[in-house]
Structures are given as C-alpha cells and as structure tokens.
Length: 179
Image (cartoon, rainbow, N blue to C red):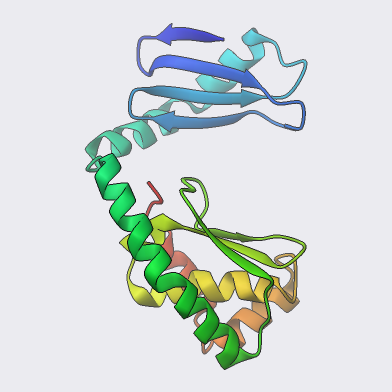
C-alpha cells in the first residue's frame, strides 16, 4: 500500500511475513517501509513519527548525493567483476581462507555477505571506496567462512588479518554508502 506524506513524498508499506520489526528506508523520492504481519497502518505511522527527524536527515543526505545513472552502475559492475574476484582469491590464499563461490551483486543495503555454505557476495558499490576498505570488507566476509557470527572470536580473527585495525576500518567504512 502507498500513501502520500507531506515530508517524505510517497510512503510505500509492504508486509513481509518473515519481518520481526518495522524497517524504514528513506529514498530520494519517498520512504520504503517493511512491516511484520499483523502490524496496523496506525502502528506503522506512529513508528514513522517516532523516527521522523532522523529519517528526514537520511533522506536529505540521499538527495544531496550524486545520483548514479544505469551506465554508471554497469561500468561499476564491469570494474567489480574484473577486480574483486582476483582480490578475494589473493586475500583468501594469503590468510588461508576457503570459500565456495563469489558473486557480485547490485546490493544497496550491504557491502557484502557470506552464506552458511561459504558463498561470498559483494556489492558492486565497493568500487566507490578506497582499496584498503575493499580489502576490509573482503576480509570481513572471509572471516565469516570461519565464524558465521560477530562473536569475540570473529573480531579476534578480524584483528589478526587487519593488524589490529578492524574496528577503526569498520568506523571508516561507515562514512561511505552503498548507493
């Protein structure tokens, strides 16, 4: 369902039966909301009200960011497919990690992920961050092939492969956005 909001523009609400909470994602021209089954529209609207100011700040930041064209995205995809698989293989070999497969995706909410079968997915938007942060994301996903969580063991392994800089690199990466 959609409705118009004077601040956000078009608010699109979808229900996901697997959702356990309300997820709100500002977009340049609206707000996308994912709700859990049984959430009333009144509850969704009250949740939006609770976070309105921070959501509006995020939407404003999105509007100020240069928008990528389809050609820009395709160029990044070609570049990512040409460079990231080689780098993943190099870092996996260097640190003794194994993974089953690698995919490059147009993921706008995550830099990367690692499945329970050790398939690594990376966002093509990694091409917009410096190489040392690309390596951080790749190492993060490679460490997930050993520890499929963010436990203290995972972070200890991350510190080992990043010379103790895992948290500083994570903080630096937060200054960048996927899309």
